[in-house]
Amino acid sequence: MNFYFDAAQVLDRIDAKHGSIKGIIGSLPGKDRKRTAALVIETLKYKAVLLEVIEAANLLKQERQKITSANLALLLVHDFLLARGIQAGDGPIKQAILRHKTRLHAEFTKMKIRRGVTSNIELAQDGDPRARLIPRYVRVNRNVWTMEEAVEYFVSVGFEQSGDPIESRKSFSIDEHIPDLLLFHPTVQFHEDESYKTGKIILQDKASCFSAAVLAPPAKDNCVVIDATAAPGNKTSHLSALMHNRGKIYAFERDRRRFRTLQHMTTTARCTNVEPLNADFLLAESTDPKYERVTHILLDPSCSGSGIVNRLDHLQDYDENEDGQEERLNKLAAFQLSMILHAMTFPSVTNIVYSTCSVHAAENEEVVSLALSSDEASGKFILARREDVLPSWPRRGLKEKMLEPTDAESVIRCTPGEDHTNGFFVSSFIKVSSTPLKIAINSTSDIQSDSFYMKKRQREVMDRHGGDARIRRPRKRKK
Image 1 (cartoon, helix red, strand yellow):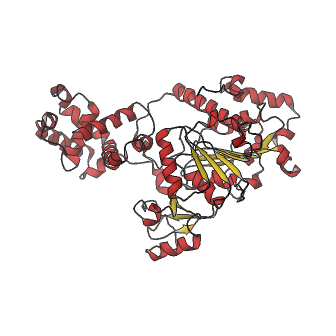
Image 2: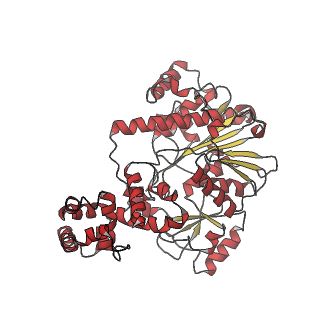
Image 3: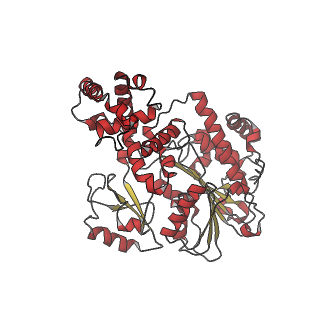
């Protein structure tokens, strides 16, 4: 029965919004994770139905002495009605459920009749329909093998490099924007494939690959990079592959459990140029001799995750009102801005890529605009030109959400349901002193002659983020 108690605690944490479903499950001990995840996910799929059955059967009122947790009841009734039965010894809690087995079965049957379904699976909550348009993206890990070897391998196990992978489970194709990225049918699974277990492939959404591709650190021994929020390690391993395992990558992750995931990921992907650090990037002193040669910084900080449509969070209940969402976005934006401003203080940095998996302008264009208008950026940083930020990608930023509308061409957006990816945003800050003159043409630093217009637009953005205090660097937190 302890297994059910532990799973109920997971549901409690999900209800309390202590994180995403994937993140909460990922924090469980390895030996219990797979079994607990399966039960929690399946229970959430049928949660609305099970709650209705439990209420109609009057279970919690009649057994309130034995079953004190609604989530525990959900899990037990799920296994009783939809699985192979309750997998526990014949104790008092199990007996409390079995005493109502006739009523539970009857109410469940009535539920199916009312909904006009004949099978249990028809009662399950569907995911976001936009997720069905996203291929299974597989990034070939160049640290382990070549693209040619990967294509040959997948052909040898029954796939065909032809046709539309969305239409056929046996087809795959090569992506047109990101090198070393393959597309498969959305339902194809690789977690048990030997190529995945040995780090030869990384399962990573196409949009998530944009960050490292835009930063594009050179494959040189003197190249030093920071990945500021590195776990689980997909982007870190991508940076390592782009650098051909040369140079140095400092991969920051402050959460201890996620740090262990990062370590495992980079080891499996054979990233020999990565040094994982269980530390907070915001507390890293930019004047530390260890970081004085850092030239490239990747920032993919915590965000609302509003762009992710092919994850488990469609099973999570969100009852946040408009005011609550705005407050949450403002807090996230303030944190995201502090990350950018801190990155700009590193003495040798020449390129900073800021990205989110959010669709909200408050976390994207508006944060970038505030960063450009800050003291840290003034006269020092501009946005890279479109031709340096995946120029072939058609969807760019929202002009009406930036202080200078022409800057929208310098940033990337991905829209779920239209771009065959999750929602994503990418921007690239370039240090002016390290940038050829042609890059600075038409940049933010050259288009502020109309100061009245710029100040007006700046005030509009700042008003949405709590005033100009938001653009100041935060105080260092004590260690």
